[in-house]
Image (cartoon, rainbow, N blue to C red; front, top):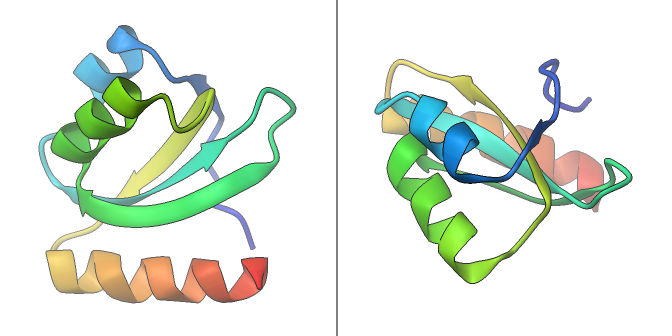
Length: 81
């Protein structure tokens, strides 16, 4: 099941609005197809993603810990395979 959050354009505004907390994020193409799922401290991760141009859209959900983020990311990656 995809993250139940709306897609945002992957731009500086989205990165600036991302929380400085652990979480899971999905990168998508222009049509909303999920390209990848990853986790980490959201703002830091999205700065890197934006710099490398790995996707056009993004959505995320926060978690309480990095361990929780990793577990949730693994669950979501399983559905892509």
